[in-house]
Every structure is written in C-alpha cells, then in structure tokens.
Amino acid sequence: MATRLIKSSAPGKIILFGEHAVVYERAAIAVPVTQVRATATVEPAPAGSGLTLVASDLDRSVRLAVAPEGDPLAVAARLALAHLSAPEPDGVLTINSTIPIASGMGSGAAVSTALVRGLAGFLGHALRPAEVSEIVFEVEKIHHGTPSGIDNTVVAYEQPVYFVRGRPVEQLAVGQPFTLLIADTGTPSPTGKIVAQVRWARQREPARYDALFDQIGDIADEARRAIESGDVDALGPLMDDNHELLIELGVSSPRLDDLVEAARFAGAMGAKLSGAGQGGNTIALVEDYLAEEVAEELRETGAVEVIRTNVR
Ligand code: PMV
Image 1 (cartoon, rainbow, N blue to C red):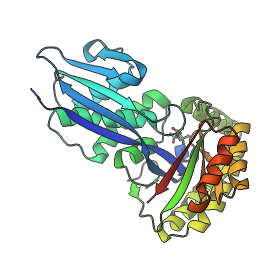
Image 2 (tube, rainbow, N blue to C red):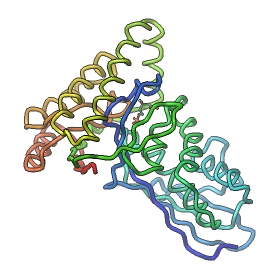
Image 3 (tube, protein in one colour):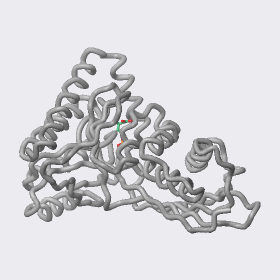
C-alpha cells in the first residue's frame, strides 16, 4: 500500500488564436496560465476503504466504488486506473482549484490532469504528458461532447502549443516574451452548447462558415510565425482580426465586445474573446508599462477579475 502523501498540479490555459475553427481541423494556439492552478493531494487511507474523491471547493465527496457513472472526477480516476492496469487503491484524493469555472480557462482539463497525475504518482507511476493528455481528452468528452483536444493538450504539456486536431502536438518556442491581460466577464461560457450552436449554423451555411474557419486558421499560422520569431507587434492586429471573425461566427456578446473595446481604448496592442465565447474571458496584449492602466479600464468596464500573465 502507498504510504506517501502525493501532490500534483496543473495550470489553467487560454486560447490565443483559433477557437471554434480548431474543432474543424484548423490550427489554433494556446498557452498555459500558471497564475491559476488545480491541485490534487492524495493521502493513504486504511486498508479496504477504497478511493474517496473530494472536491473541496464544491464541498463534495464521493467514494469511487459508488460514484455515479458520469461523475467527471470518478471518470478521470477510473480511466487513470484502467490505463495503469492498477486496482483501486486505498486513499483520499482531494482536489482544489483557483481556476475560474466555465470561463474558457481550462478548469475541467486542469482538474482532471491534476487528478490523473496525482493518482498515478500515488501508485508509483510517472505518466508522460501525452498519456495524461489522452486520458483527460476522454474526460473532456463528457463535459463538452466534441472537444477538439486543445484544452487537455496545453494543460498536460504546460507549454505554449500549436495544435491541429488529429496531428501530433507541436510545442511553440516563444521568440520574445509578451504580456496578456485576461479579463473575466463574469458570465459563464457553456462550451458544449456554444460549440453545438456553431455546428448548427455551419449546417445551414457550410460555405460561409468554412471560409471563416479558413481565415481563422490562416491567422493562427501567421501568429505562430510571429510568436516564434519574436515579432510581438504583429500579434495585436492578428488578435483584432480573429475577434472580428469570432463575431461573424456568432460567438461574441456585448459584454465581450465592450471589454475588447475598452482594452484597445486604454492602449492594448490588440484584444479578442478567448475560448468558446458568449461569456467567459477576453485577452488583451499589452506593453508592460501600460498593463496596470489597461487592467483598470477593464475593471471599470465591468471585468470581475483581471489576470496578468507573461507568455514565455
Ligand atoms: O473550453 P473553452 O471555453 O476554452 O473552449 C474551447 C475552445 C473551442 O474551440 C470552442 C472548443 C474546442 O473543443 O476546441
């Protein structure tokens, strides 16, 4: 029996370019956000007690043996045990997270990643990022229906990634670090529902939607070149263009547009919504000397939280 206490964690994430189009095999770029994290702590429990999963932020605790079929924590734990061909251990696995829920910051993927790594560590295994990502992708399907796989990838690798569905993940080398402000509308962004809305809209107007996806994919490719070559100045206009295309896809909202406008007004080099949209977060690219001013403008425009992160 394991006797050690194991701790593991996983970061939040933000999509820089390519959300929605990435579901349709276009390129996207996402980066980890290490200022917010999900943490799993696993402690030994008396022999025969099995595994108990505790979501301490939600004040919820469930024994794996009797957890409902679709419970996301139980699904992640069962998939991890199956992957390791390991029997259920005796332990208590506690999850904490500082990542805002349903805001496009990858909270679900980070919780699953921390859980899978923690459980593996408790059983004496170290999983590779690709293995963790694959398990978490299965859990994401329960949350989102038809996820592209970008969330589990960026969170499990904890590196900036260039992602095309169905292709091996490519890690991005950032030529010149840059600063982003992530501003939360405070309105939830139900990813599965919005992805389904886009699917229906595309069924009605396939040519129009595919053309928009193509343009978004081209922007992600250009952004990749700019990020790798350290051409930060090129990124702002690409974010602005990507936001316009997301408006055309029908996934923005007045609150998101207001925050994007406010960031630009206060001097951001570019801004867009990030993630599924309709609520959730915007991101703004800022020069460091202006970051506090832009953050203040975002708060005055109604952002419930502004997180500053440096992409490197
Ligand atoms: O989980 P979110 O809100 O960051 O959205 C994921 C991004 C989408 O492209 C909208 C969906 C997907 O699975 O890639």
